[in-house]
Image 1 (cartoon, rainbow, N blue to C red):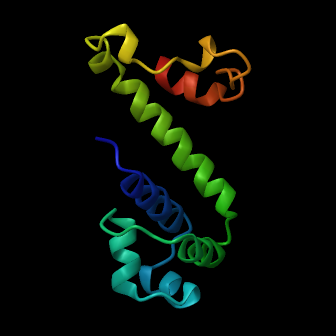
Image 2 (tube, one colour):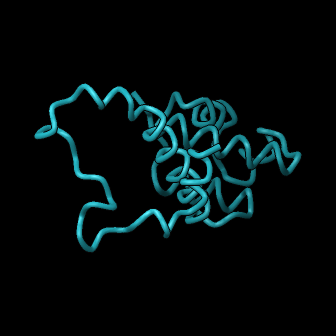
Length: 118
């Protein structure tokens, strides 16, 4: 099962490490305990929207950017799990975006399609 909190933690950790910042520095700026931030990054705790906004502020990145990255990772993980769904009866499957009129097509998120193709 794909857990949102784990993907979110991975993205937050990747951003922090890419910036060369320590847990202590970000936790101080975000006004959250070091231990709690560590648990969020490891996907062990669900962060509230207020806490996420505070962490993003400390990292200097918009929350929307973090959520987009998490969404892309989630989509990729779902697509990689797709073969498991092949055994599911057709009437139990959710429709794919390309088959639902008026839904977002994969042209909106070409980077996800490119990641799957790689």
